[in-house]
Amino acid sequence: MAKISLRAPAKINWTLDVIGKQLDGYHQVEMLMQSIALWDEVVLTEYPGSKLESPEIHIRGNSSKMPLDESNLAVKAASLIMQRFEIFSGLEIEIIKNIPMEAGLAGGSTDAAAVLTGLNSLWKLGLSLSDLNELGTQLGADVPFCITGGTAIARGIGNELHSLPPLKGIWLVLLKPPFGMSTADVYQGLSLKSIKTHPNWNKAYELLQAGQLSELQQNLVNVLESVAAVHHPEIGKLKEALIRAGAAASAMTGSGPAVFGVFSSSADAHKAALKFKLLYEQVYIIPIHDKGVEIVEGGDDTFDKNQCSCFSR
Image (cartoon, rainbow, N blue to C red):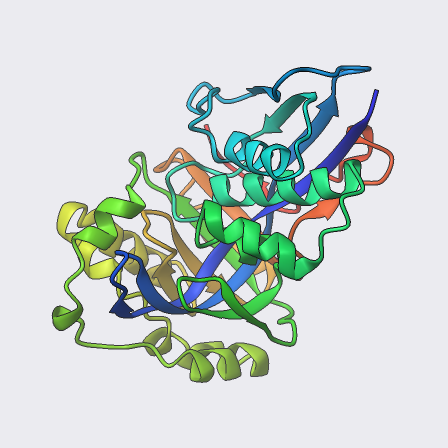
């Protein structure tokens, strides 16, 4: 039985800017992106000796909220690979969800990135990183970053990546409110003319690299926050609460609604998180991470635990 196991990390956006809109409807962005040490576990298993007339994909997982059909981005990734290479096999995808869904953390995109990376290895397809990114772009704007991970600036529709030297010693307290946000709806509600403040990603990165977190708040700008906050003013209140709890800076990630606070130590992050664990169902203490999707040698029995502490109820 051919089998491979992978870690699929979540991401945050230190900054997110929208600088234009293409004729095909996609928005042109400029984002400073970061992997974090909170990941889904993805296990791919090829049915033993299966040779079918068409691909057969089954998916299962631990979350009742995760779609278990062709609408799941992981299934779409597997179908894309199997069609491209005319592979008529049976495949099972198992996803252990640890990343909150509909949160702006790229949970679906990173699962798809894991499937592309895993099948490339499992079936020895010989796809380069550039090839994988090209396939990932067909699935979603965040998928290419999730493949490579670390710290990077993303442009175009999110698929033009430039990796940056890794950041170190930064911890996050992540709060996921009890509601989700549709990425498509948030982008649809954005008026480019209404954007008053554009982020300076280079300045934000310099401050993060130098550990000058006290100057960071005005540079963590996500232009989608103004749209999300119209529907959910709680997002702004969560940011303010994190600052009051000791965070050096706070921002919404992606299209929301998850919000993170920035801390220079695990101890400070844990102290702040204790103030939220009785108020919110999903509270995470997470270090940043310097990798994207990783193959786990030895199978799913050797998964390291997520490096975050979770107070979710």
